Amino acid sequence: MPEKPKESAKQHPKKRRSKFDFARPRKEIRKEKKRMNVTGEYILECSKERTWRALNDPQVLSRCTPGFQSMNVVAPDHYEGVVKVGIGSISGTYKGEMKLSDKVDQEKYTIIGEGAGPIGIMNVTGNIELQELDALTTIVYSFEARIGGAVKGLAQRGLIPIAKYLIKQFFGSLAEELAAEKIENRSAHIPETST
Amino acid sequence: MKPCAFSYVKASSLDNLLAILSDNSDAKILAGGQSLVPMMNMRLARPEMLIDINDVTELRFITEEQDHIRVGALTRYNEIIESDLIKAKIPLLSDVTEYIGYIAIRNRGTIGGSLVHNDPSAEIGVALVCLGAEVVLVNSDAEERVVPLDQFFITTYLTDIAPDEILREIRIPIPAAHSGHAFKEVSRRVGDFAMANAAALMQVGTGGEITSLSFSFGGIGDVPMQIDLNALVDNGPLVEEKLDQAVTKVLREIDPESDNVASGDYKKQLAGVLLKQVVSEAYDRATNS
Image (tube, rainbow over all chains, first blue to last red; front, side, top):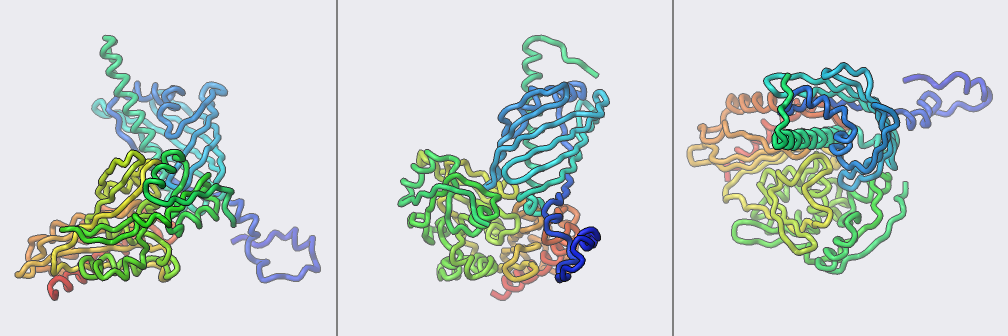
């Protein structure tokens, strides 16, 4: 636990030391963000190449995002958007932006995002990696989130399962999207790209 | 802290409630208010409208019907504890309800409110999953939907209830006579959020063998977890060795997340201890009844 900054002691040399002097300033504690890690994987019945294409298509991403409201493309791989998320009695509209970087074609990318809503703010860094095995693609994800605001208290209690649930919903919609696309392709007699 | 501004409507009957709900799907239902109001005060929940259902007496009952007991969603914990019917037919439920919060919470908190809120370590959900209860939901078109409780819970704070639906009642099958039950929980202080809790219900045959066994954990997963202990059923009298084997098997399958009350590793350890204690206690009661 860091001690009280020395500067403030200099500023008020005559001020009596309260018993809280050795505690960290409350302001600092309030501003501190809570860290949360979520990792997991999701298996899609689809080639790596098509999964990669879907994960880079802003239209697909927006259709799969739970509670998606609107999005606008600021620059390639840089999006701004609004989502409405409701978990039980906690619901709100969140504004945020997202950047995709460190892309390695059909292998992996990094997501850097931030969002703000009525009950808190969040910064997210995530890695997405694709692995292909017998026509199945495994998406391995790991996210680190830093959370601030009122929702911070909840971060310790139940936010991880909720985050996992939302991620699962996203990949579930992605799987449906890819399955629908496959049927469309077949009916149009477009041969599937094999890898 | 104080809540954000909201509008308030008091429903007078179930029909009135469903009508208000169909016009305001963003509204939140206020029953006992023991979870919702603190969340509103912390400004985590910011509903635009509250529908008070405390006058809807149709939702407040405990009745027996053939092989099950129906409990209205607005039944308060204290009414469950004091109910002679529940004490006689489903003693597990009255025992568990005494572990919930403090007297003040039990005076106001309702069984339906707790189930819909779905806190991962709420005692009532653990007991009802163990008992194999079902929930009855009704929507504004008066359509009924019966959902087994273990499918009703989706994840922490999320349940399979639509915005225009209300939880009307809980149906709890009456356990066979001479069943043994047990419930235990570990929390820092009485009334705190539990680190982990566990409930068991079993029947024992004349030879001392377990003929049926139902077991559930709370606080270990994101929702109350039903645990398969079939290895112990129809397998001769319960001895320590068999129980230890079952514990080892269960501990391999669970992976609790850390939260603000306990770390994941500690919860895993607690799960093993609770499983052993709860199953042995239920066995003793079943054999001595």
